[in-house]
Length: 191
Image 1 (cartoon, helix red, strand yellow):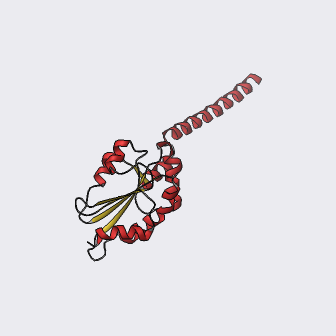
Image 2 (image 1 turned 30 degrees about the vertical axis):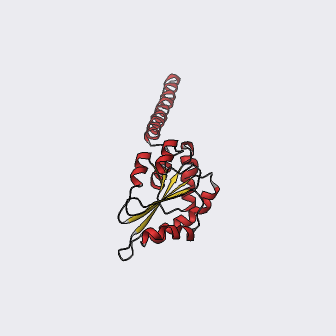
Image 3 (image 1 turned 90 degrees about the vertical axis):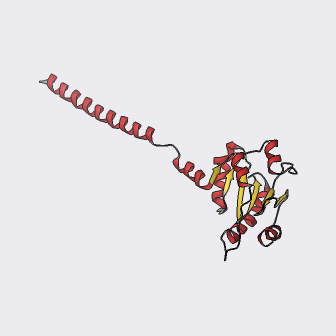
């Protein structure tokens, strides 16, 4: 009689153990199949797009309806950070066409290191609530610097303004305030 009760208690123990083992296996499989850190990947895809220099060159071509302002910056560049609100304000005020007028597109190009993309660039853009598009290029090579403008030394902040017609380009290697930016751009908006 005692051997039957020992057998039944061992059977209950094993069945309970098997049940817990199955639950643990199912939970492990579910966790393994769930994409890791989908939230941060979605945030970076939404806030900051990684581009190549070829893509940037395409964006540097004139558009008959839009004046483009391409601002090169990094999270480690204090003057870059200080001028960003002016550029973002300019984007908000001039990015929508009013009565058929030309529009302005501001594009922020991050030159931060790739290792800082998720830890510095994306949180910076999110915290500041930047509305203008932000792309990530990474530190440029010397050929890429020359491809933006032959006069560029590679220092930041740097801004390229591209008018609506071929040959309308201005390059500035300095910090810019809102009124100064407006003066530079209005020659392309109101020729």
